Length: 96
Image (tube, rainbow, N blue to C red; front, side, top):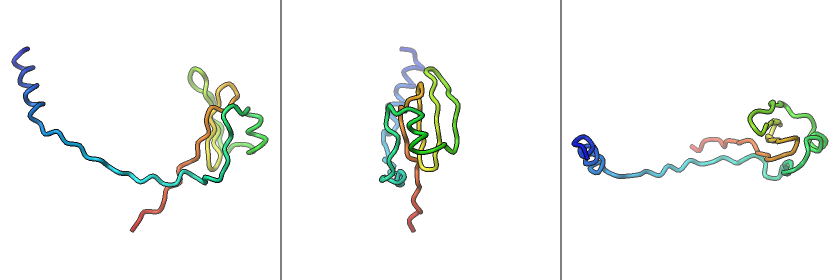
């Protein structure tokens, strides 16, 4: 081991080892009573059930993944089928 490597190792060992746990409160993840599109649903079924999305994002990547954004949730598609549905984060008012 070189002198520089030895010195670096000794410095790292001498540093105090400590960790701090941060607790970050998570707000409600949208309306839990809101039903979301199920995995495997077709784009057509989502359109019929929820109507036109507010925003359509074009497919990107391989395999191509597209996203439709509704007011309270987003739906992710691969090859015209739902792969996931996610409620939008609804932050809570700060506590005083």
